[in-house]
Length: 115
Length: 116
Image (cartoon, rainbow over all chains, first blue to last red; front, side, top):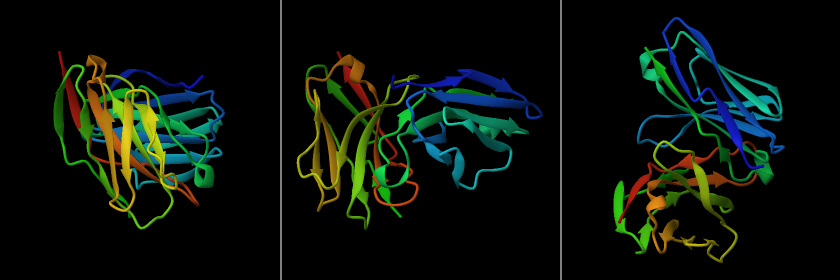
C-alpha cells in the first residue's frame, strides 16, 4: 500500500483558533516530512522527522508545531496563524533519510485558509 | 547548496505528440538522485520517474523517459504519446545521497497542458 493519507482535506480557521493537521502512512517508512505549498509554486520544506525524532526544522515560526506520536503518524499543530499561512500543506514519507534515503511519497494535502 | 532550474514555466502539446521538459541543476556532489514529480490540478503529487546519478543508463517508465547528462547537469523529461491526463505541473527535484538528512530540492515547475 503506497499511500499517505491526510486529514482534513480542507480547513478554515480564524487567527485565534487552534487546529491540527494529521498525516498517516502504513508503508513502514521511518522518515516523514511537512511541506507548505503556495499556488503555482513548488513545495517548501518545513520539517523532517527521522525515526520519530525531529531532524530538520527549516526555521519555521513557532505557531507551527510538529509532532510525531509514532512511526506511522505525523501531526502539525497550528496556533495563532496569519492569513499569509494560507496554503496547501503536504505530508510525505520515505523509506528513511540518510544514506539509503529515497523517493518521497506525498499525501493529497490539506488546503488551509486562515481568515 | 544545490539549485534546480526549470526554464519553461508553461508548455503545451497536442494529444499523441511528444514533448520534452527541461531541467538543469547545480551541485558539487558526485552521487545524488534526480526525480520528476507530477501534480495534476487539485490532485496528489506523484513520482513519475527517478534517476540515480551513478547510473549511466537513462531511466524509462512506459511513456516517460529522461535524458540525463551528468557532465552538463541536465535532466530532461520526455513524454511520448501525450494524453489529456498528462496535464499537470511537473517538478524536477534533486536529492543528495550520502549522509545525514536529505530533503528534496525542487525546481519552480513547468505547467504542461495537453490539448485535444
